[in-house]
Structure formats: structure tokens, C-alpha cells
Amino acid sequence: MADKIHVEVAYAREDRQKIIGLEVEEGTTLEQAILQSGILDDFPEIDLSKNKVGIFGKISKRDAVLRENDRVEIYRPLIADPKASRRKRAEKKSRTSEAAETTN
Image (cartoon, rainbow, N blue to C red; front, side, top):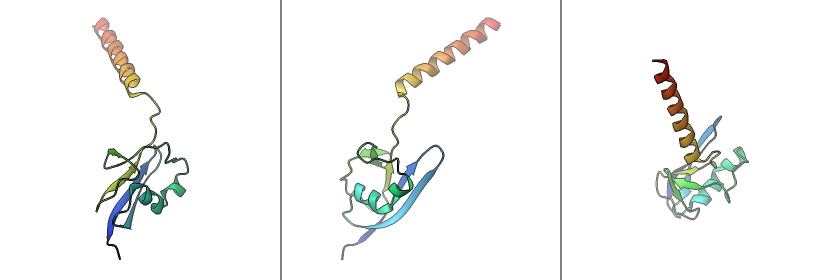
């Protein structure tokens, strides 16, 4: 009989987060743990062919073998381009600074 290890599977939306702890056999892959956790039933929008997955914030392949106490994370797709968002914030900050200078 194979030894068991403890892992967690996590997914977060803006309105709801869930972390599921489970015991799996040594040699279990990231994808197997996701399927065993049942998290796909709670969040039907997850599509493992599209959503990236990782372990402790580091993108990993679905066939990565898990170790004791790993936290499997399922990532949501970005809704905005990070570069464009930074540019927009910088432009807004620049306009705010210029407006403050003209009133002084």
C-alpha cells in the first residue's frame, strides 16, 4: 500500500474562495489531486485545458508529482492586460499630479 501525503487544492474568485485539504497517495499528480478534490463541481467555470495551474504560486504542468503539504492552485485567466493596466494607472497618477500642481 502506498503512503499517503496531505495536499491542498485552492481556487479563488472575487466573490468566493475555497481551499480543500485531502490525503492522496504518493506519486499523485497535480491534475489527479484537482480531480479528487471535487473542486470542479463547486466551480464549473474551471477548464483545466485553459486555466493555468501551479504549486505555491509557481506555474506547473498538470502532470507534476505532488509532495507532502503542497498547495495546488488553479489560476483564473487575466481579465485585463497587466501592462495596459499599469500604463493606465500611471497616466491617471500623472494627470492627478499635474492638476494638483496647477491649483497650488
